Length: 248
Image 1: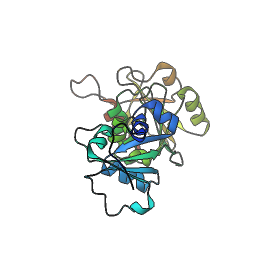
Image 2 (image 1 turned 45 degrees about the horizontal axis):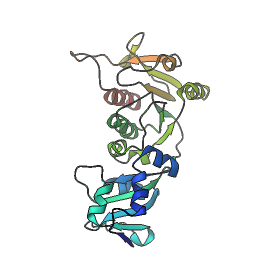
Image 3 (image 1 turned 30 degrees about the horizontal axis):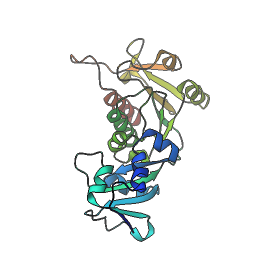
């Protein structure tokens, strides 16, 4: 087991590059933090390297003899943390796509908030959606805040960045019915009989689904607001609709 005690180590510089979008794209790897996410990465077979602060005690189920393990002095491990109080355990993880047969697809158009994106991915996993397509302008799914918000669901769901103007017609040619969220000319979600192969489009938090994307949708749906709120949070709306589809 290698141990690093210097903050100026080239290895630490390499790991810190994984905290940037450019560094992640160049390497095809990303960094996860915390025991739960590291455990999910190990179980998914995505682990490249396990990284532990000297005070951290690994789970007994982890077979360290079969892993590439790096130990850091605690003050060095703090440099990799993006949480208020780190557990002192990290992992370098491969960006390998999850292979899933597409049936229920969540399509996201320009989602900007990392917490919203992570919550949507986690909820998609919970509701049995197999795929999440990210349109241009959507936040990087390997952003640390997104990764934490998914709570490991990014290892279970097929996540791809795509051009929605190309992908939606392709889905339709495969027999998918595309449902887009909209405020006007839309059916209440509880009045819609959803098809078997579904693509559900959720739009930008402030602007909704772009007109060009909405034009490719087969059916427009909305969730009625009963109280005085102007609208629902995008992740909450996505959750309501995905569970309506899953449990219909």
